Image (cartoon, rainbow, N blue to C red; front, side):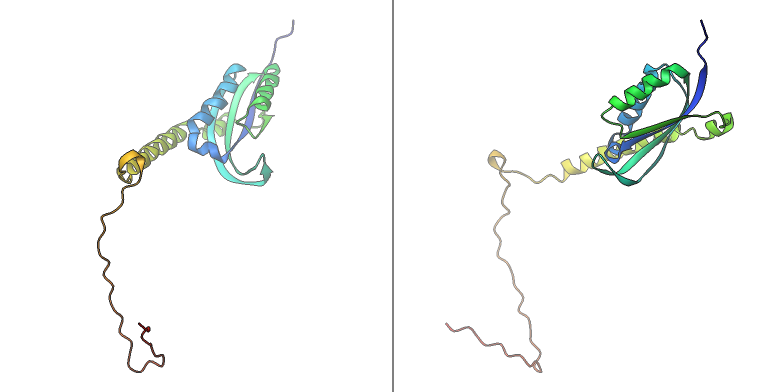
Length: 173
């Protein structure tokens, strides 16, 4: 029996821009794919959100995640299969990272910043929902919108300068 070699890979995973609303969901999905293949994540970060060179499945913008991970070479097939079957992922690319140093991989670590961004987005969403509730239009009976109280509308007459060339004729009675 031959021993299976463990390699280090660099993976770039593309999600639709709509996943920025649920960064935690995208992150969990990606970690689950790697966990099923028994991959050890060395570093993971949100790379960037950017415009795509061409439309992919109706998406013009995308959200990229950069991941360095250690896994058995034969498990890479399982990761590729899971990525192809994923309804969330638009594209992915994995290459061996033999030329990337440990320091470079550690420098690419961004899980703490990603966790901060997820927390910030969640608090902003909660504030937005609270504002919507506070500013909700009061309703009358059976869900109809309440009508404002009828008040006379005051109209201010406009003065026309005496040197104006237009004449205003009164309407016939």
